[in-house]
Image (tube, one colour):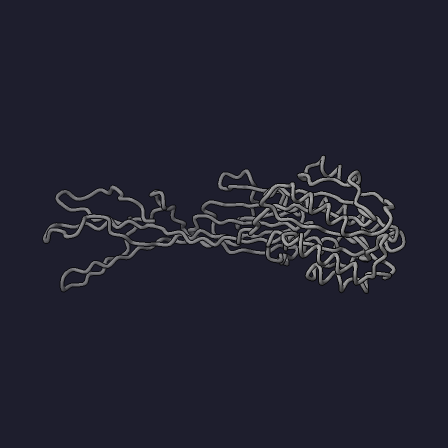
Length: 389
């Protein structure tokens, strides 16, 4: 908004006309992360006898451990995510479960201590899902709920129903009791004994939220878990910047009030470096820098940045950088004298470049400021030249 009136020297006997330059600010911000609610997630581990040959290397256990660490690093600076674990077979024994807990070190240790090979008999998905639903009922309200099942996909219990009957039962239970719970299946079946046939049933039950996992590869797990968590947090799919080894240049225009570099990291280990136009590295402790950071983000806000070609680099992984600029734009406003003005009285026109707080703008020698004005008198037009005052 325009600044308030400034006091300027005036000639004796003259009126004062102040033309003060205001500066509306146009800002380009990175889109905020639209994450409506923190997460309550149960991991359901299939510990039935069939997993001995469909998952002999215990891929599902390693995948569950990785999910625990992945969720612990996923925007926990912003959200208080909770995680629980249910081991199941014919039943889902309470002594083999971990209730929903905030993801601190103690919780991670408790969960990982329960992620061990077990032989719990048959495969009753209903019993495991019932325990998860009961636990959600006693948990905090206003949280996004999800269940992730690690399994070969094949249901079985002492009743020995048909495959179709088992999946009909599961589908009806999910529709009736889990309308507000997102259900995902991560399938491990190295021999292809069950999953090729069962995935169509699980696809219908989960609305397509199924993933096959043939081996424990970090890149594949990252892809699966990123898809799950971005969907739960309602964040658009991230597209990481392609930053060459030598870095990317960013042109900084003169007379910016502020420039902000917002960095979203794929992992906590990602390193971001920012170089000014004069070759000096930007440091969080620099007097013109307002810095904030978390596990997966960094923000540098630099006041009155020097114009030139700045450069940033990203190493040890991938990231996304968005640059926000606060532009200074000129607006002329007549503050005084008020209209009408007595005809015949001497009038002096004074103007200056000012910031929003009223302080003067420091002129850059390489980018000189120029100001022009036009005064129209009745029946006459007179153009005033630039004033350097």
